[in-house]
Image 1: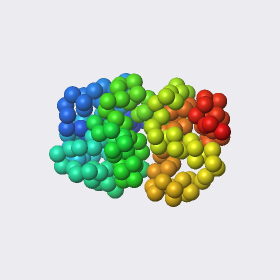
Image 2: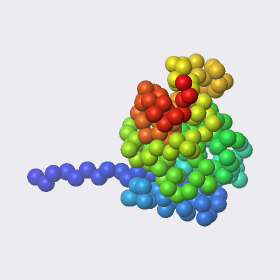
Image 3: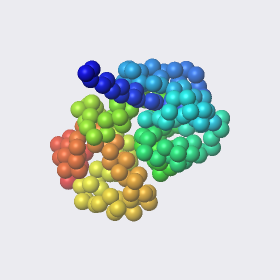
Length: 207
């Protein structure tokens, strides 16, 4: 008998951005990161319903924060309500300091500034796709830590739990976890202990 050949379904990525050039750049980047993926281009949230019927549900969503049919983080809420387990990356022209925490609180898994450049955007998306590993994908760039990430290092050194960090910063525990996830990948480490060791050996902690 001829053995049955099982066809694995290609990864389906939704890229939702109303700026044609930016959308095309993200699509090209995703095709380099995941050759063979089915990359679906949309210019607004309203096109998702028809896209799902034609292509199936997304395995990854790359979402522009400002779209013709969204206000604030409404697009994130809408997509996460429908595709709760699907990784969602926000790509925005707004500085992270202005919108990152609101987006993560709304359910986004990662916030990426469009000004970051193709390599950094690619690294961030790759890390999101390989959340169970992929630490070696990023090289340490401690000189680019955000103010929030520097705060987290100090709090980790104090031995605070995620709940204690959340209470002190006035954010949710989920947001703390996402911030830590990004910090670990930024430094190329895998744990709190390694983070503190890295910070001490690189002069990030004065004591």
